[in-house]
Length: 252
Image 1 (cartoon, helix red, strand yellow):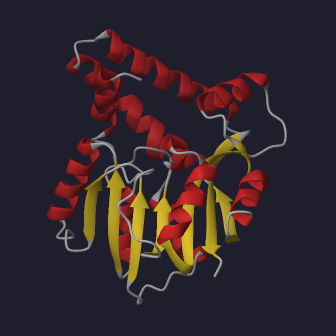
Image 2 (cartoon, helix red, strand yellow; image 1 turned 135 degrees about the vertical axis):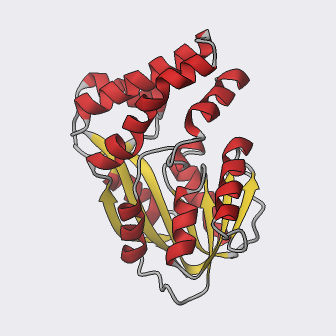
Image 3 (cartoon, rainbow, N blue to C red; image 1 turned 30 degrees about the vertical axis):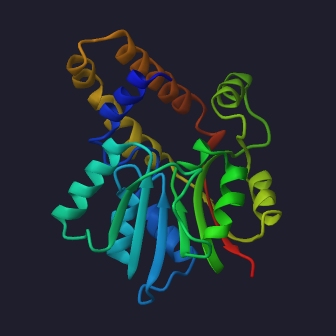
């Protein structure tokens, strides 16, 4: 993807509530499954935070200081504006940075959170490299594209293996966690509404304005066609894959 296409992607997604599948109920479910104490002061790193849907909810629901990191300045600017408008900048520290070069200290965080973003570095590399930033007994909570059946049609198999070769079943991901110094605590998959109502339908509603605002350029049209293909494949094959949410505790 070239720089122009990257900026166009930011343009398409920066006004969205979410930059990937997810939902408030599912974020709250993750908090509950990890049994995070709402009265305990927690340091949380939200890696690949986008415009801050998760970070904002975490500081509302928990007694937390959240460091929110994304490599796209356009997303971080939106997060800063939202946090300032809600009076939450004292609880959220937005940072432009890369998830494979994080400005964190060893054992600095109680929780590392990453919804729909760890694929940018790869699941195995992410869980291994981020572990050192967690305190002993700290929690890793990440969502990852996951096969939810043992077999699937070749069309969707080829698509996702081309887009993200590390896609696998939950058992393969849990095995990576177990061999990387974590104890798996819980796992669940995102339901259909997290994809359609919360993510894809809002994207579709922005296509016309996005294309018009970018003079129907070839790059803008390429991005829209790629999004349309992904949406159609989800609608056709949603029984075979989803995002899995993985909750694990760092071993002492």
